[in-house]
Length: 117
Length: 111
Image (cartoon, rainbow over all chains, first blue to last red; front, side, top):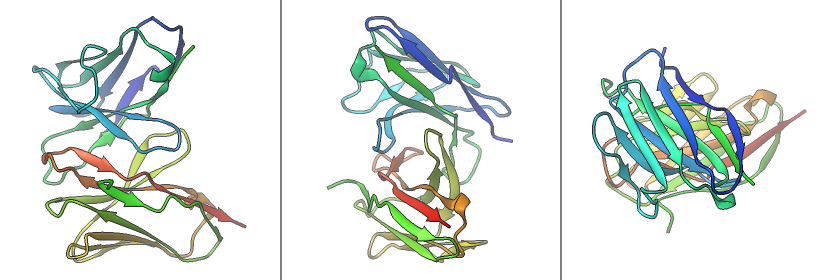
């Protein structure tokens, strides 16, 4: 149990275009989902916390108008990278929190590798 | 100072060796602690939670020292398949379920 899927697995797009990444919890409902970004040889950095039915909470330094997050249901959150630029090329990973566990365990999606040319 | 600090390695060890990784965290109010494993170009996977009393899962032993704000992971009888990056993770200063990741320690187990 506790499977999280992410699509697409990888995407190559041209500078200036927008890319949408989906994160789904397949066998549980997630009240909260998290979006991370990881550059090569660096740690995962939390970008934003997504709560179902409410606005996402963005970490300091993350532009909310550039990284649009929608958490329309308890099993789906989307991240849209708008007007992508080469510096947005990164590994984007989502995680989902069932919210019904005593400990703070999150289940991670397999990640989406974005390359902007 | 980073919130979670780890030695990046890489640590190259022979198969069968025992290896230990350390991690320090800066926020004394951190509540939960974990070790995650991340393979190259993959998502992190939870290896084990870390408790004050210490805990063991097969060949893996984790320890937490709250006074020193120090977490360790010991791997015994290392296997080739243990080669990965090991991430030290704590709940962030913001509380709730926000995880803060260390940069990871890379382990390479060799024949």
